[in-house]
Structures are given as structure tokens and as C-alpha cells.
Image (cartoon, rainbow, N blue to C red; front, side):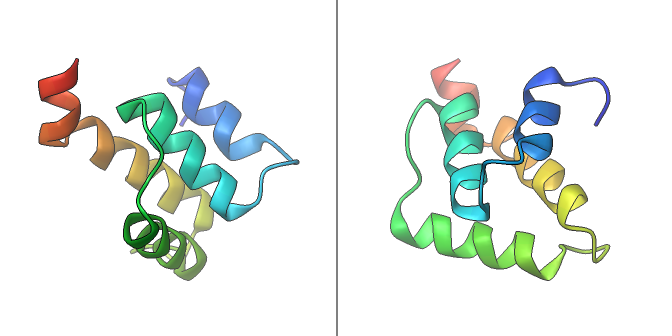
Length: 76
């Protein structure tokens, strides 16, 4: 978490709710808004705390998953 300023800003922003965090993740990585289905899956993942039960870690997991997606690789 400490190596990415973008990720830290998204995680630590007190004015962003979980939906807005997902939007920020998509905009910062894929330069687009998530679809309704993508947003719903991501929000559920973050609210459940991901695999570790930690919402901040779940946001980081999603960030790295988006960076490793074929969509990111083909667009960047």
C-alpha cells in the first residue's frame, strides 16, 4: 500500500464511499467507469473485506487485479 500514491489516495480519502472508491479505481486504471455489474461485484468484495477480512486490503487487491487485467494491458 505504501508504494502507490494513487492507491493510498483512494484508500485514505475520507470523502469517498465504497462506490466512489470503486469508480476511482476504474478511472485510475482503465480510464472508464465500471459497469453496474462490475461495481456491484467490487462493492461486495470490499464490504466483505476480501480474502483477509480487511476492507483496505480488499481495495488494494482490486487495484492490483485491474492493473493485471487484459483490458489494462491492451490499453496501456
